[in-house]
Length: 251
Image (cartoon, rainbow, N blue to C red):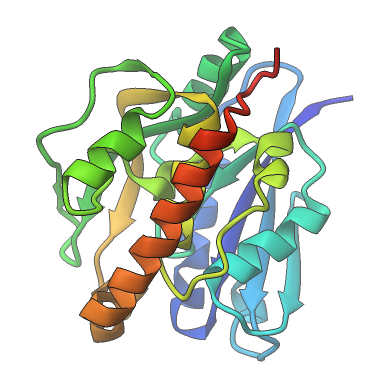
């Protein structure tokens, strides 16, 4: 029986038309013998806009749930995540060739690693891409590396949470994504970093689409009072986990 990577995508009506491109990028992934991916598409709500864009493929499972934001949708999807690993893929993003195989190789090759991230390129509306300077070195990220950088750089992480690949049991143990209107993926990234070593791949692992409807481009996302509250909760959780001194893998 094949072992599984579960790809989780939260989606709502405005981003549903991008699902076909995300699907094509998944179909282009090549995995080692004995491995397969399964795509869980979880709608944030119970409308009629998303279903027509979901591919008809036995490797794809579509679910709906009460509206609660992307963090709630992704966490609900965990109920159907029957694989060893969880990979995040936002509905409007794409995986470059080899992304899943590289993440898998990193964690299968080192049982002390709990999660992996990778380099990101912005995918602009005209089809061009833009990269960034300042990525970490290719290789392991010691426990606490991400949170230390995040605290010292105005709550900006050195790696992108939209590229997360993690052990399912570890994601479940940490409660999945945080119950926040935004930054819920950053909250999970920092929680993972607080309890386990990670990995950064210098190879491009995500094409991050920039378009007017994306959540991070809305005014509410940068509202100072809400951002301060989100960051305070994320920071408090990170500190609490660090103080508990629970680590993966356990002694």
